[in-house]
Length: 428
Image (cartoon, rainbow, N blue to C red; front, side, top):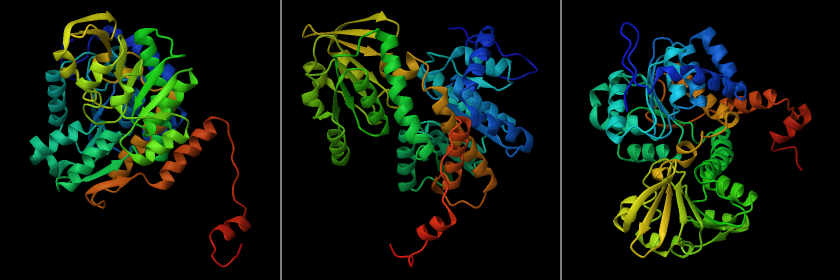
């Protein structure tokens, strides 16, 4: 593909085509209708400029919802650069609009190869960020491994994925996390809603767009019963599918059983499933021996963060033919005569074949991101290296603003109730 030439005297960027900007702007504005919390943060940031003077890198899925986070960060005064966190998740019209209409440098286009992705990470680090907004920890990990001389300039990072938090925890254990990292992923207004409702709906949306398959009556195997797995399993059952869950965690396995799902190892589930969805964050959850046991025509896809959950190398080694049968849909014909269909090249199906999470749920996730960035700046030099939770009052305020925007009111404690709940002498 041809990358749009850089416009001299303005800014550097790499997007597919600036001519897509008008459609992107229209879609960004449409998404904003469902993002009232982030809109209020955008307005406050524009007045207060809490991020003035900060060089910021955001590595995110470049979608209509992310556009509103980028706008909030720019409104706050940040000198921000945006790159893609996944080669297939970029919405090219949105990337074009952010450059042309909002003056935000973007390095992202849908379908960029691994070499380009890595180059964009290096371009982002050339910006010498004080703050990194990460999605999967790639930028932070690259900084720590390859650019240690820049660590002194880093105030901190924010991370909103389970995979990224696991990597940060490993970095901390190894003694290389020498700066504060805000755990956006585990904020209640993030993982309860984004991971469960967002992933649940958008994963099935991506599968249906890629295949136009009827889910009712199919057997869907969901690998992993974390919050993303819970949402995916629940939504699949709601559309009439018979759902099997695979797990390595006994507590989550019991929970899945008590939620009404069948639970079994992948080795057993492989022979039963019509559709397989991985949401674990780990590698090779579906392997060669599983492909061999699958039904002819089984559909396999991933909604975890990286494209390593499905062992495509092993699948390719057993294939006598690989062909595209629909957009984002490849059929592998195996030596045993059966076929396995892979969606979205094993990357995030909800972003490869669909549009990602609905705007209403990303409103809360990105509100957490924006306020986490502000928190890092306000507490510069005061936070210890390591992983920090989003403050409870910030989490609660995001929920309050969301309820307010939805026109929903809740009860408040009376003075008597407050005394009772905070006293150990009041009795029962």
